[in-house]
Length: 298
Ligand SMILES: Nc1nc2c(c(=O)[nH]1)N[C@H]1C(S)=C(S)[C@@H](COP(=O)(O)O)O[C@H]1N2
Ligand SMILES: [Mo]
Image 1 (tube, rainbow, N blue to C red):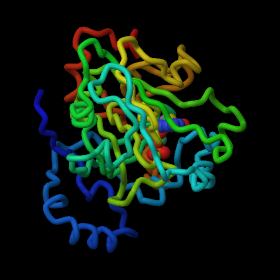
Image 2: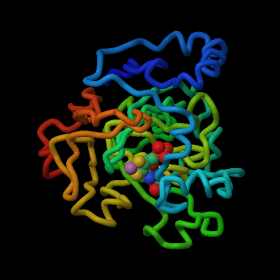
Image 3: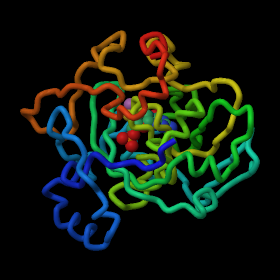
Image 4: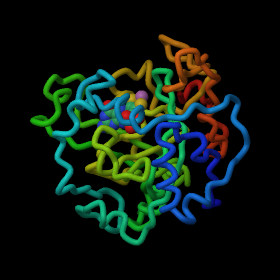
């Protein structure tokens, strides 16, 4: 599999005017990392920038409640130190890992990704992270593993949404192994070149930009290599509305709303909705689904 990946978004797509100075400081300190961003093919619609403020105050993190403002209001109470990630199942190197141990030997890089929530809104977010494939490579995936299962921390005393039981926790998700190995799939540890804010899934979360946002599970405490398709929280909550694959697909509507267009957060008062792109514009994942009925496997 080709491991090189070219960013199709640059800082021009992300950085708002209000953060321009901040951006210049970032770029000055970033050296080759910043210079390495290469503009790719133009997207169907011009991209509106997303501010750090937008990215960190308009969130879905149901452990803290279902309002978009709940995570930024309550996530501060989440304990992220010490942090331990259990690795188990069909791996050569199972165990309990700190984030540093999990990432040892890997160099986090910047990935500026579109983010499309199943609810019909979107953002552009500059993540910092490592390819999930590189982490799995270190862990040593054994013969027979076909899926990767992920689990979020549960801290009832620190999480009002857990106390209220708004979903069946822990929040769990899963990927087919070949999806997990795709170079677009990352474990992110930061955004805007800062450590991951708690409301965005500190200290480490999955990001799969070609899938609806709910697949990008936050605040990971467990990664398991398994043989059978693992449970996924939204799929289990409402299998009629949320499939296991949940690839962004403008031609497969949610039973209660169209997925053909999306509202870019921060697009401004007069911004119109823009077309949603197949695989959220990440066509390079198409080979993963060759021969699959993407209506049936939504
Ligand atoms: N553990 C956990 N992970 C989660 C969620 C959640 O409620 N709990 N929400 C998902 C949804 S629906 C979206 S759109 C994204 C939002 O990520 P962001 O707040 O960093 O933009 O996180 C996903 N990961
Ligand atoms: Mo979402």
